[in-house]
Amino acid sequence: MVQIDAIYQGNLRCKATHEPSRATLLTDAPKDNQGNGEAFSPTDLVATALGTCMLTTMGIAARRLNFDLTGARVKVVKEMITSPTRRIGKLTVEIHAPAGATPDQRRQLEAAAHACPVHRSIHPDVQMPITILWDQ
Image 1 (cartoon, rainbow, N blue to C red):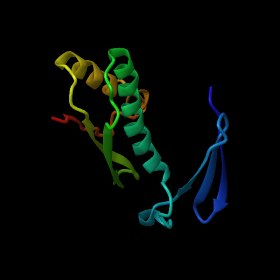
Image 2: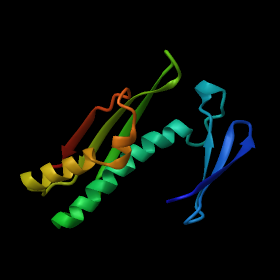
Image 3: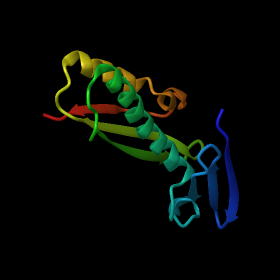
Image 4: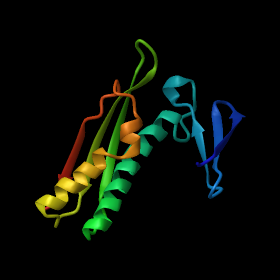
């Protein structure tokens, strides 16, 4: 169990604290929803969580496979929709992984990315096209 505490600071901004580490982060409503867009929005954090979770689960698998995943990177593009209600409509994920993986390692690392807990927690109505590109 992990506790996150947040306080509304006014002007559509919140400060969240990760209880175990005491690390903090700010959220701000996006400019297209009455905010200043000066920090991650809550929905930006969903996109961030997805991308970093996929890299992390790949990293766990890479350790087991004795493959160095250092330098892998992810780009997540979040698209909002407004009908029938404002929500995340699409999260497009593009992962760039380093060269050197065998076909079997690639298969296992790609399976790990798709099995990340955040990916499995996002509602199936959210489109999530995922591309994994292996450097040459």
